[in-house]
Length: 446
Image 1 (tube, rainbow, N blue to C red):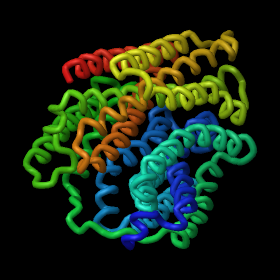
Image 2: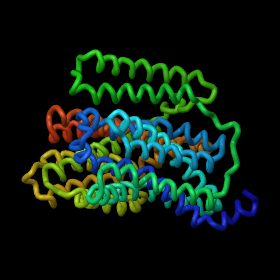
Image 3: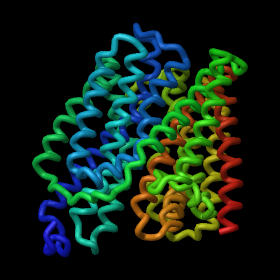
Image 4: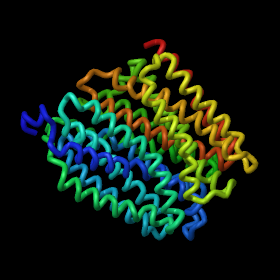
């Protein structure tokens, strides 16, 4: 970008922002939207098993999470606009195969491909957004992009509800193909190219180890109820996860430019922020996974009404997120995490007889609690690192969020399949509570 544009910003920066926000909304909305289709897919001619249902949801999220940091480095090295366009292509290809999938295995593999495309879209869209604005306006640009990621959950629920209500479930994956095509054209026309950073590190072995370890962990959690917790598959999966995570840590300690240096977690503030974000989204996406099934299968809501029924969670989240900066972090973090635990405990009593307004009260409590603590936790991650590591902090924040989401879905689905929805909520609440205690302790040490 010429020196004058560095001072004044790109003349089309508002349009660039709109295209980048739309791109990240598309990538993130599909995480939430697929939960609404679970009852329909479960009853479809594919006849997926309970564990396969979990893989349909989590294949996208886990690949998305593990590739976020290396995808950001790839954008720096090879060009952010090019990586974004490539991500749109990969995302659309995965969605197209998912829409046409003849069997469950193909659907799961296609979801993983789409997750890889989403990982390429997210960091590139943020970097291109920031690059289009002058330094004085970049805070506003980041806030607007972040708001788009928050709105994506609502858009995914409502938009997914509309699609499932009026179209076959395969349209949930077909419509994003068209949207990705339109956005790719807009990116090509509206967005300028950004300079490349040839020295940007790409730790491909570290990325492969982290992804393999995460998939092994989820395999053990998801396959446990069907295969048996003492089965060779499950024990091998957990054993492989431990070994792979240890090898990953060893590789990161030796690598000249590691994907994620474990020594950074010696900082109590960084540990607190990452664990806090992880358990927050662990609880949220456990809720998203079971919410659609409860409202459709138990309460008899239509997919469209189910999508709208999540709105009581989002309104207090949005309002309190804007006000959370006025609260002291030492109060906001424990209060917010405790509120999430309380909301999950309230929802554990949900059954066919519970009126929706009472159920919605639990959603309001969780949404308000997230609004209070999540912005503070995200700030903790960024503030724990020096300014020159801001890109790593942003990637770590996003990756932690998606990893927490994937594990939350797996744990909720696994416990629910064996012991029921109420037990699932209580186990998830217990995990969030344990995380809250650690986060509070680490923050005090910091």
